[in-house]
Image (cartoon, rainbow, N blue to C red; front, side, top):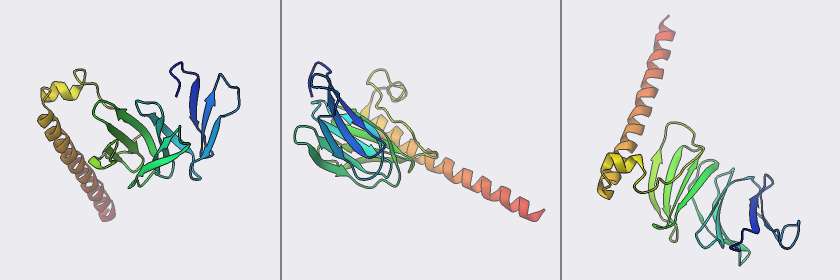
Length: 178
């Protein structure tokens, strides 16, 4: 896109991706259908010519504005993709959705790097800035420690979910006995 901020990209509730240019006029310069589901999130790559688009059915694709077509996808979502964030220096994309998974993928190869399960439906995801993050403070800035913390967090989330299920099961057993 242009550096002066005159181009705006919009995802609609009708599953269309529209590009507006305020220098040209009020009508969209590009109007591209995106499946048949409402677009829930957008995230630009650093160059501004490629945009990641997530929708309500779990599709996540990259759209190339210059070519005017979709250039690839990440598969495996079980529910609506609610939030995207791109970490440009490491070329990573994070996604969160109603399927309760936080996913981190490589931007170019789109390969899965991390997949964490949370106990509640997710609505937002953001990469923390290096030096400002709670994770840096806890792990002392070590990448190995961060990976270890992510693995521990994954275990904790699963354990907490299992404990919650066991507690619900015990309560329902007690109710049946009465």
